[in-house]
Length: 511
Ligand code: NAD
Image (cartoon, rainbow, N blue to C red):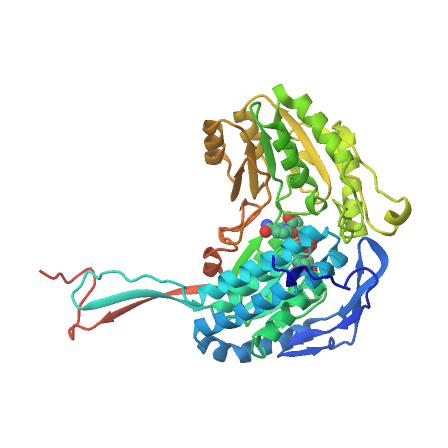
């Protein structure tokens, strides 16, 4: 992190609330209807972060028209030149990292260390994809015929419609935007209504970096009002969505009739497996960070911990002690370790699951209540909560809660832990704590997840490895790394016959 990125910032709770429009054809415009919606700080409902355009289909139409018009020129711009614009945007993000992190904490609640990490992920992805301006490698391969050359190249799909969630408000938009742009696609993004400011900030960086008009467009507003018309638009060739599995299914169905490219990153119910030979302090550190980082509101959150019976009691005692000691509060306070839930509705979901767990007979070991005393009463805070002695079939052990609730499941062996780990509808991330390399490799082989960690929690992905999950977490694509390029491009195989004669593949032979 550079010194400039860490400079003190006046941004934060109580800073003036600006009005933000849509970004269409290089201009900031109000919604066609003139309506706006408010974005409030989940740590303090009296703190208005900003107002945003409450858009509808008409705004989507305008944004798609702008993207359509900009596409031929952007596509024709040599990819290394597109990369230079992205590189400049990354440099701007580096300079503004601290401001953007503070804005993010204010709009979605996670603690500053984490929002700095979120902006850093956008920086990493933007640099990485800027570099792809000089790579985007295809293949050349010998022909079976004489005097014939062949190669494969990538082409952009066209207009990319991006629909993003609130828990990684700048990182996830950058995971989609940057690969889309470097390949020559133009983009229309619809951010989550809880976190539009971080996408506004990302777009400001691209604007300042010199992105041409119409290449990037943003329309803010609700899922049905903006997301649905965007994914259903006949001119949108690829839809990239991150969010819940329920909405992802709707996206998949909307894309199917026109055979649109459709990239889905959805829910998770990730597991940490703690073996009897594990370093327990390390495993507890991992379970605390994996379970309660971002208040458990990560697709990769470690919401289940399977612990070998031989160390179960000792692990649980230490885990509960550490969870009880977590400092919960406004993430702008550097000493706070866990922020609020994103909204009143999300906290209600968490409370609902606490009741479900109790009714199912799971043992409530700590937490279980909303936090309302003093300052905390102004936000959507909930205690870090641990259920113990969980049966792996309990709803709290298989359903995504998306809050600070961890279910601990006793197991008798590695094989049982793997069975429990795989026996959910999701397949995003898993991890094992063990000192035995054979156990580590066995689990690595047998867990059917897109991401796997050894002696680390289920979170901590880096931008230069593929990111995504199996089963109901994804639809076979991957975000980040070069794999993201496959989502936003079509391959073209090219054959050049310079023999001057008709040569027929698979029929003519050359002696
Ligand atoms: P969500 O599905 O409610 O919303 C995601 C986006 O879809 C938002 O922009 C929303 O406005 C939009 N949307 C909602 N209804 C829509 C509709 N009918 N048509 C079109 N768009 C619509 O999810 P969320 O609450 O924002 O995020 C939490 C979920 O995201 C969790 O399930 C989490 O696991 C998942 N997630 C997954 C990953 C991953 O990479 N696998 C990463 C982060 C979050």
